[in-house]
Image (cartoon, rainbow, N blue to C red):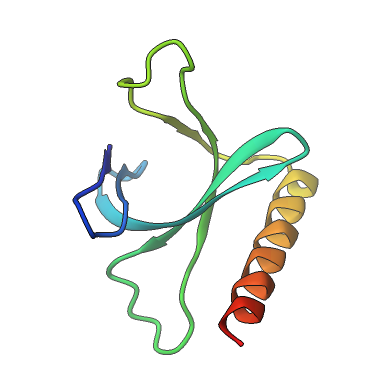
Length: 99
C-alpha cells in the first residue's frame, strides 16, 4: 500500500514473507532498460550510519490509476546489479544538484 499525504514523503507498507509489516520511505522510482524499479528505505533502520535500501520491480496499471502499484522481487543477479548501478547514478546526481 502506498500512502501519500500533502507535504510528506511517499511511504509504502510492505508485508514480508515472515508475516512482518514494514513501513518504508520511497526514495525514487528508476527506469532501467524500459522497466521501472522502486528504491525503498525501511523507517526502522537502526544500523548506525549505514542505511538499508531495498529494490523491487515496480509496475502500475495504466488502465486504472487508482489500483495499487505492484512490487515484485528482483531474482536475477544481473538485473539487480543494473538497478544498483542506476541508483548509484541517481545518488551522484542528487549530490551534484546539492553543490
